[in-house]
Length: 540
Ligand SMILES: NC(=O)C1=CN([C@@H]2O[C@H](COP(=O)(O)OP(=O)(O)OC[C@H]3O[C@@H](n4cnc5c(N)ncnc54)[C@H](O)[C@@H]3O)[C@@H](O)[C@H]2O)C=CC1
Ligand SMILES: O=C(O)C(=O)COP(=O)(O)O
Image (cartoon, rainbow, N blue to C red):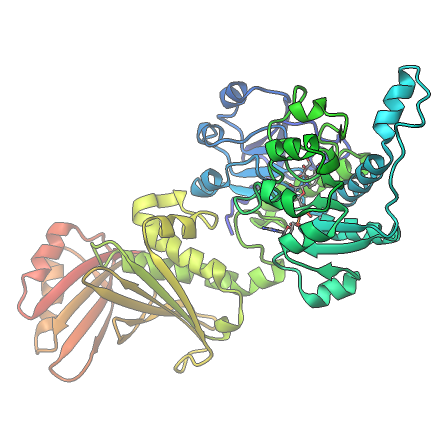
């Protein structure tokens, strides 16, 4: 995982809080003594104001109000982490963050209860016209006739999105003696049974329910998932609740369905454009609404702010985080298993990028032996870091490695096998370009560190460090001596030398560790020798 472990006093970390966060929730940041944290709270900024203030920011903390656009990310030259004190990250340009190697974390658990309770409150208020009746009464009218509601008991609640909040809502709805039918692509029959609900398709949910509530993230697949075609298959007088995200329900279609009398009412906490003070849906008496208050409880706000604060601290102290959004989440114990192989994997990638001049179309990594039992995704990321190091330098990290590789058209294949051909662990990295194929394999020797043990199928034993010369030659007498003489003429001292061949008199390789950097001129000089096919300088 991306690591920038900071020692106390070595660097001030600028933490910029752009949306109102609970002061109790950021207590872990305030009381942190090992890191030099500079906390800046500046909320309610217009996008251009944020851009003007973000150049030296290391960590940006937001809720849903601040939109973290590509422009913001590109203006933030020092940004390493974006913390979302809440769940939805649709206000953050995740592609831009990933591309720039910025890790995004959220707080997925802290507001679940708050959002579920708000949903139930909205559904009950909708069923009994509580906001409308209250308003009338506040205006001095004792009107009992206009607000005859409906009961929840024995009605069917349709839930689209049975994640954390959806499941909590379903649980509470059952307490109201409702029947629950739900759609979620990951909902299994077993889980549905466990929750005491029925599993259905989106259409089945729409057709069966008197109340429908959505609890998905806003994604291309969920945008407008409730639209005019779906309203058409719903029961007459259905009631709609959206405490997830504006846009999951098509607002124009909802408006039309209410005006047409198909939908009896809607309870909305979220809108496509927020703040939504002047929205046409708010002109309808059947619509009740709150200004995105789902997560606005003392408890939830403290909890989400504590979670992101802890992740910031963890990131700077250990290089890992608990709730990553744009990279795989790997528990500490599992990460510890593969951490010793990080440098080896990166060096194998770095080795290969220096033996080819062509663009890499395919990367095949095979993990053999004990390492095959581990979560190897961080190792693949490290191998990619090595491969991209000549083009992207230190800008490649665990967040963006795979993304950058795939963006340049590299196809990545991981393979695991338990047989490691005599080694306890073996990592073999192969690259395929338009006309070439190159392979290098390495292992971690117990107590002796990393070794390259195979290059293009030839067995070697090389410490992957410093300046290496990789020479392909014909297995003919005198080749080794001539190479050594030529290098001596150029004042290049050979530290170690390994040779390998496929068969007597066939193709051979020399792997030399040398004490000096080898120039292109030196390479040409050696390459001119008889029986030498190819000479490459490799710096690891
Ligand atoms: N109004 C508010 O203040 C709050 C709103 N939210 C919103 O609620 C959303 C859900 O939050 P959680 O339950 O915590 O997230 P979650 O990740 O636990 O659950 C989301 C569920 O949606 C499902 N899903 C994804 N694509 C789907 C599709 N095409 N159709 C049906 N289901 C699909 C997922 O499989 C997952 O089970 C958040 O993404 C956020 O936008 C969350 C907290 C507070
Ligand atoms: O957590 C979420 O997804 C929310 O929508 C809560 O938003 P907020 O942090 O209250 O602006």
